[in-house]
Every structure is written in structure tokens, then in C-alpha cells.
Length: 116
Length: 113
Image (cartoon, rainbow over all chains, first blue to last red; front, side, top):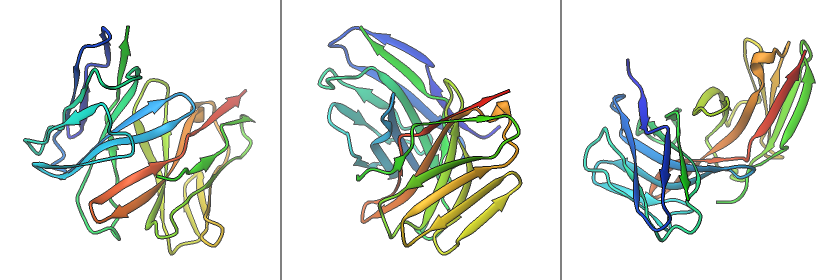
């Protein structure tokens, strides 16, 4: 079945450690996104990538890094520089297209990261 | 980006209609979306509306768009307990770098028997 997969579902890390969240899609989508969700904050865009080997900072990119070496994969690294890393992280993908077309975003099930 | 505004909570009785409101920021947004999130899960697209439309109906869902006031609403008819979830309004944001979605904070809908 086509879809977008995030792993793991729950992740615990000690403060000061870097951690990488996985996001894989087999929808053949060009564009992929990372959002962070905090209670009462909604979703905020961390990074997005419109095409392989290219990515752009979102609204809250500080303390995060990404790579897009393959179309199917868009891993997110939460570095020790991120001051408040504990959150629910959502990955999404969509077809790349002109802005006047409907580009529905498909979301993964999320990874809940807890830093202790 | 600037904030997309939604009320945080809504409680309705089973069988009643629910109306969730949203005010968005970017008058050039091409599409506006409603997503549903069940506890501990990702987001599912419920419906969307193109910016040159005033209304869209899809089974129990009706979306109304007032472009002048940048106001979007989602009406759920005959609300069921399975509709209890968080509903997010989102606007498409286009820039030279590409396209992304700008989300509201979500409205928690509680449906009571």
C-alpha cells in the first residue's frame, strides 16, 4: 500500500544528544515536510523540501537539520542546540505542482520525542 | 508565518450540527483545507476549497469561505461521537521557494451522547 511512514512512534533521548527521526514515503511525491506540534500551538513548519537534494527552512528551523538524498526519504535530526525538543513531530509529503493545483499533503502517524 | 486563528474548543451533543470557524491570513492563498487529527495520530485531509469558491459540500461536511473577511468555516451535520477529534484549518502559502501549509492551532471537538 502507498503511504508515508514515520518511525519510531515513541522516542526517548537524554538531553544533549542528537536524534534522527525517520520519514519514508512510497507515493512518488516530490515534496516533503516536517512539522512540529505542541499542545495549544498547532503545527509549525520546521523544514521542507520540494525536490531531491534541495530543502528550505520553515518557521522554526533553528536546532534542526535535514537531508534529502533520496526522493523517498526526508530524515530530521534534532540537535542538542534545540532548546525545547520534546514534542510530537509530523512528516508530510505532497506532489510537486503549480500553486494553483490542489496539492494534498499526506501525513505520517507522527513521532513523539521526549527528551529527559 | 502569521497566525491562522481558530477557537480552541467546541462541545456539541450527538446529532446536532457542529460549526468550526477559522480566520486565515494570506489573501493570496489558493487553497484552504480542513484536516482532522484523532488522538496520537497524524492528520487526515477532510476537505478543501479553492479560493474562488464560496461553498463546498461533501456528504455531512459543508465548507463556507468568505474571502473578503478571510473567514473559513466547517459545518459537520448530524455530528457523531466518532467525529470527536482536533480539526485544523490550513492555508496554502506560496513563495519563491515553493509551497507549504500554514496551520491554525486546532479546534478540539467533543461530541457527547
